[in-house]
Length: 206
Image (cartoon, rainbow, N blue to C red; front, side, top):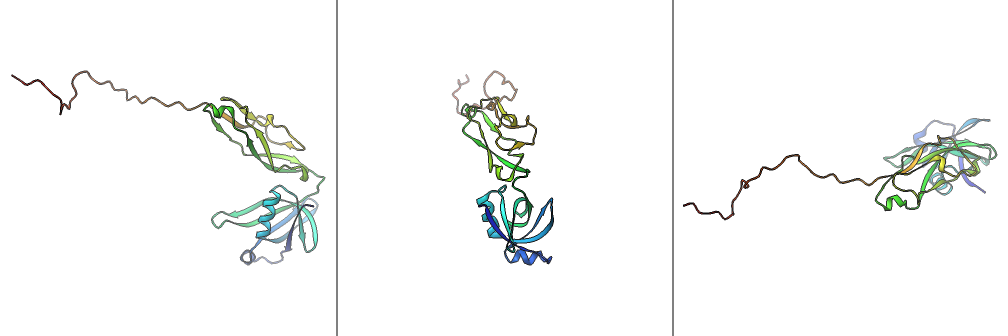
């Protein structure tokens, strides 16, 4: 059984009071259903997302009536570290949906051991899958990646999902080690005695 999150239908528009009471205003929408305004307990919401993942299917219980939903978006106040609003999509477990999935690099690249520098320009990938087949993350093994080599989306072994992004997109690459530049002012010192000869022994003048 999937995670269950209790919700209450929202009829008023006093969002400040809802948040002050420890709740999060939210909306549920779907292709075959009308949008519904609700609110959920902030602690239960964070606990459910942490345990179920942001792409997990949730049984949203609104007044005893449950429906399968997925979290599609949420707004957060990063200063106060609180969630301000959440959007849920009503889903059919047999119908495909789009989702963003995190790329997780696995292993230590051989090129990094040789002094190379690893870069990861892409951290998430867009996929299409049935809700129950969306992975929490996609593991990419970089163990055999050498200096000057890279891995693209085409190198990912897909499971029960389709990748929507360009297969030539570079996920990770190993750059050559940075060479230390020699410090050279470009000026040549003139031959002769140094200007400051204080402390040196000199021949006495006759």
